[in-house]
Structure formats: structure tokens, C-alpha cells
Length: 89
Image (cartoon, rainbow, N blue to C red):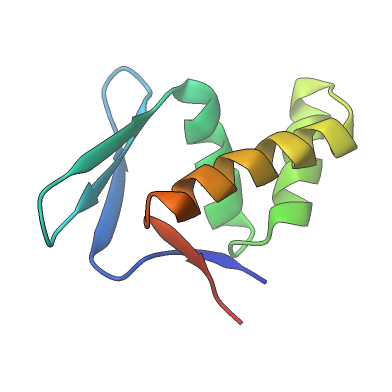
């Protein structure tokens, strides 16, 4: 299932290359480092699909695709726990 931002959540990349999510409802923010920024951009480029995004990053970073996918799964789970993203059928 594709990963999408929750309704009312926006994201942007800061000047220092970090990713920041903002929740409109209460103004809270969640900041991620540059590696997460790359993962988010890859997800957006691949329609929210983790598999293709992880494969692309693994190739770019010369890392094992399974390890890259596992890292992305963990990170996306953290975003879900923070109510920033959701799976969309």
C-alpha cells in the first residue's frame, strides 16, 4: 500500500537538508535528518510505494536493498505512530 501524508500534515525540506512535518491542527512539528529527507523524496517520486523507493536508494547508496527497505519500514512505522502518514489502498 502506498504511504501518504495524513490529512492536515504538510512537509518541507529545510535549508540544512532536514525534513520537517507540520500538523495544521495543533501546529506541532516533527523534524528528520537528511537521510530521512532522501527517503521521503524517494517515496514521493515513487507514488508512496516503499519497495521501489528502497530499491532506488539502495542503488544510489550502494547498500543492500533488503536492509534499505527494513530501515525505511522502521522509519515509516515511526511516522505512522506520530500520526504523520498513513497507508492508502
